[in-house]
Structures are given as structure tokens and as C-alpha cells.
Length: 168
Picture (cartoon, rainbow, N blue to C red):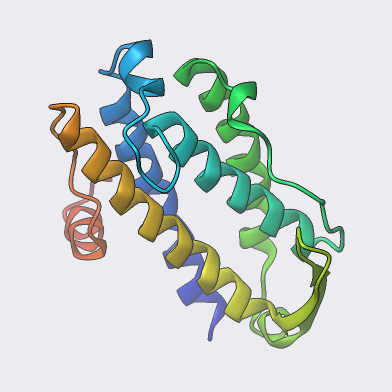
């Protein structure tokens, strides 16, 4: 795992999250919070889970182990979610920009929300976060289609194609 690869993954992750949030902007508040019977009941709840996971991992990388993810109810609207997302994304960008190849190899110990202690190399954890967000963005895509919305593509190859053409 090289720092340059991690930085590309996080550029992709930010791009994909932004594309999902752009699609979600077209939903009504009722659609945003409607219980659709998924792993996380609504588009909002699934997005809060993505955001919460990105935040909790960032905190763990910095040496603290929060005991819980933020509750979905803290974000009644997309605007409220975007404010927090912007803050977390900025912190995450600063962290990623400073990552070195050597840092990616160092072990990071943390305690999960169940009180269990784990330890992995930072690089593996950083890969996990992007993979986790991708998985749940896929769930959001399904929920958006159930609501009649037309999601934007978030495939990694689409990201690379757009980057090569000079746009993201």
C-alpha cells in the first residue's frame, strides 16, 4: 500500500459521496427520511451511517475510540447532514494529505463500539473505510431507485475516466 494510492482512493471516495449527495438533493424531506425497510431504514439513515463511519475511523486513526456513531435523528434534513459531512471531509482530507508510505504500515489500535480491542495497519483501515462507504453508497442507490430518483454513477472507472478528461 502506497500513500499515492490511498490519496487516489480518498479522491474517489469524496467524488462518489458528492455525487450521491447531489442526487439526494432532489428528494423531499419525506423521501429523505422514508422507511424503506433496508439495513438502515432510509436514505438519510444510510448516509448518516456512511458519514458516522468515516468520522469514527478518522478519530480512531488519531488515537481516540468514540463509543458510538452519531444518531440519524441529529440530521433531520440533508442540509444538516451536509454541514457535518463538510467538516468531517475537511478533517479527513487533511489527514489523508499527510499520510506517508511509512505511516500506512504502522499499527493502529482501537476499541470498537462493542468494547472490543482491535489492531490493524493504518493502510488496511484506510482501504476498509473506502470499501465500506462504497458498499453503503450502493444501498443508497437502490433506495434512490425505489423512490424514483435517478442516481449518478459512482463507479471507480467513471471517476478515473472523468479525471482523465479533466473533470470530476
